[in-house]
Amino acid sequence: TSAEDLQTLVLTTLDKGGHIHDSKDLTALDGQPLDQLNLLGVLNSLKSRDMVDYDTIDREIWVLTDEGRDLADTGSHEARVFSAVPPGDDGIAIAELQNLLGEAAKIGQGKAFKNRWINKKGTTHLVRTVESIVDQTQVDLREIRDTQTHKDAKVLVELKKRKLVDKRKIISYKITKSSNFSLTIEKQATDITFEMLQTGEWKTASFKKYNFDAVGLAPQGGHLHPLMKVREEFRHIFFEMGFEEMPTNKFVESSFWNFDALFQPQQHPARDSHDTFFLKDPATSDRFPADLAEKVKRTHENGGDTTSTGYNYRWKREEAEKLILRTHTTAVSSYMLYKLAQEEFRPAKYFSIDRVFRNESVDATHLAEFHQVEGVIADRGLTLGDLIGFMDVFFKKMGRGHSPELSDHVLTHHFPYSAGIERIRFKPAYNPYTEPSMEIFSYHPVRGTPLLPLGLKQWVEIGNSGMFRPEMLIPLGLPPDVRVIAWGLGLERPTMIKYGISNIRDLLGHKVNLAMIKDYPICRFDKKMGRELVGVVQ
Ligand code: PHE
Image 1 (cartoon, rainbow, N blue to C red):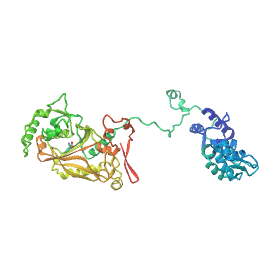
Image 2: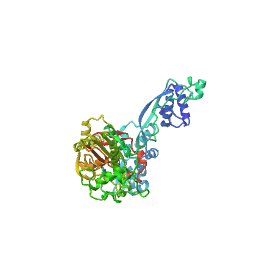
Image 3: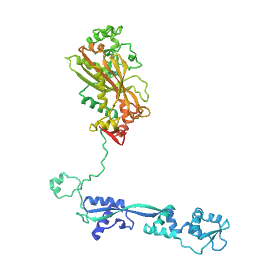
Image 4: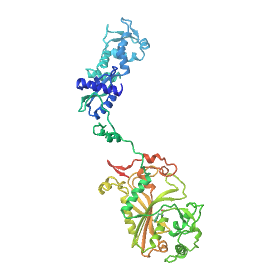
């Protein structure tokens, strides 16, 4: 039945009778019962025009299974067994009954015995014990077929056990007229048109109602890579703490800014091609300040204007001119500190989050290209205590995301991971450009992923930090009493933890499935602890 026919049927029936008590009693023009789901579509469309109203009627009915229908037509298994046993004392051999009725013989015998219709003769034969029977099972099945239920609930249970009947839920509708009821359907406009405005037709036209319940189309745009989402969270923390972002938009640096300005000796193993990518064309650049280069040279060779003795080797300009893909964003920090020193000193807080490159063999947790979170604070009188104190505050803000309304109590006690990194530890380390230097470890109270085994109660290295040495700062031109604390963290590791990614190659590089960027939700729910979740919307 077409939607139009259904519509006419509903409207004419309502017109005649005033209401439709139960749509299950409606029959289509072709005499078939109505498909209630099609009817619902028609009812909703009429309801949106205020032509009809309806209530849903839920009912349970009983229907026959295929086998049940078969038995309703031809008789039950037990009746078939009874018919197969001839009257008289000879009866029938059980084996023969089996041949005659197959599967039905087994089920039917049991029931026929129970009904006391047959008995055994010896061990091999069956005989009748009554002259005639009433096939009650067939009677019951026919009653269910015709009335969709049975007056005796026990019968329904019993026949369901025999898989002859089944329960089904059906929905039908009680339909009434509504304020705009009419037999004809007025054509409704969906939009105001230019013509309608011009002719004035809009004043009288009937407009289709908006369906605010319609399920919208999923928006296609605006997907951020998980790394970029976590980067945004970090940027947010930095800006909140008054930092300026450093310009890290060039990946190629001279060795000078990447190594020499950082008091990294020219024979340092990190400057080897095994660790660093060198450019072929152009292979060098001399675009770094000559006066600075001179100071750096003297500092490396003999300590220059510092109290240091330097490294006692001959510094070569050619080595500093070699172009490389920067191995850390500290290359930009050294340049920014040089810029800062060009004017009268003012305290500064800089950060950056960008790519760095290392000639590493790639595996599940290492890439040759990854992101560093870099921070630098320059001020007079800074101490190692400031660095430690800063780290404490900074890491506590991590993971809290955009849920500042959550109290510290909730965060610490229910969402240890989401609360940010609550416990950090420092371990003495060595960098050519910092003294003292500290590796930063964080305590992870929540399980990580199999390949990132951040197990319960485990300390994990998350970064490196320190106070820049005078051998770096004095040549850059900073006043001698200015102290600079700095640190570098990875961006990939926290992202992998937050998004449950166990292989770094699934996150970055040529093996990334681009669809993942679309598939990740825009709201990340951090680790579930207790009953609730902490969500971070970006
Ligand atoms: N550049 C260091 C690294 O790549 C991190 C760091 C930055 C250490 C600043 C100390 C100070 O691991």
